Image (cartoon, rainbow, N blue to C red):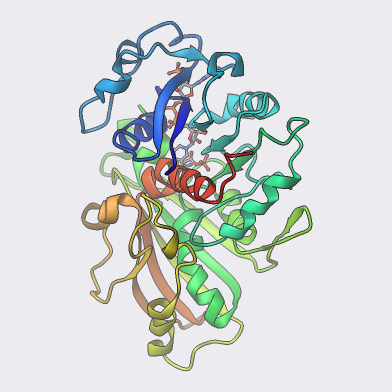
Length: 353
Ligand SMILES: NC(=O)C1=CN([C@@H]2O[C@H](COP(=O)(O)OP(=O)(O)OC[C@H]3O[C@@H](n4cnc5c(N)ncnc54)[C@H](OP(=O)(O)O)[C@@H]3O)[C@@H](O)[C@H]2O)C=CC1
Ligand SMILES: N[C@@H](CC(=O)OP(=O)(O)O)C(=O)O
């Protein structure tokens, strides 16, 4: 039986609130500490937060006093989840790890660090072994694990079955990203209502690199990235939750027909299926046959927001295959993905050392 006391850094933010909602009845993890900026520290959570979730603010956290994000305020926790703003996540997460407190982060700062796993449990669970190479503190108790960008999650999860069956040669992806990806209050309404904004600062370079780390291999104390190129275009669209991606992929050994490509999705084996992780979707990658699916409004919440949907699988004219894929950006692509990472690491005993 796993039972851990946990803290949340950035607890008042949009992603922090999602952590709180998703962890409300979690069977393994109990929230005992909440951290945010000086602006919020010293206030009860219910006074510090501008609650934007659809469900009630959980009573169990409402009266917790928010602390500044310093490890000395988080003494008794087993580990922390971080939904910190990336402008401060680098220093704060390092300070926690150096003080012996493991950090499971949603922020981008350490994703490309050589010894930090960039982890999606269904894609590269074995990369967790990099943790033992980290030296944030002298006895190895403190470490950092990250989850990818919200576009890289459905991209890597949908490429994984194709990579195993045919090998990836190159990828072109256009992401249609919902407004919740920009946090709260996010994109100005006059920019996004009845409009599309064809630029999201800093996004394309992350999408072009993260999947090559996720689909890479741990060699010694680092990850060998894959060499296939990804060309990305990131676009903001007026949906609320769920990033939809249009993907074209060239394969090393292309399937002889579309049925063979469908079979690759149908026969793909989820490597963590047997672990019984509480947030694990039964079907992590679902292939829809209906031409109009998947849609963010209809499908983003499937399996608690943890399923990656694939649809419109078709033979390509320029590259071998085309398809669309979609995942809930703030659950599967952010807080829910980080929680699943925490569950995987708990099941593998990483918090016991
Ligand atoms: N993977 C993904 O898809 C997504 C990732 N993200 C990432 O998650 C992170 C959080 O995003 P989001 O929730 O939208 O951001 P918000 O701006 O809503 O929240 C930021 C949080 O960081 C805290 N914070 C800000 N400055 C400091 C500081 N100096 N010291 C301590 N805490 C501080 C804020 O506290 P306070 O309220 O007190 O200011 C707040 O709790 C970002 O790194 C973002 O890039 C976000 C969305 C999706
Ligand atoms: N940029 C993403 C959200 C985000 O914050 O991504 P990252 O975790 O890579 O910083 C979006 O706007 O949808």
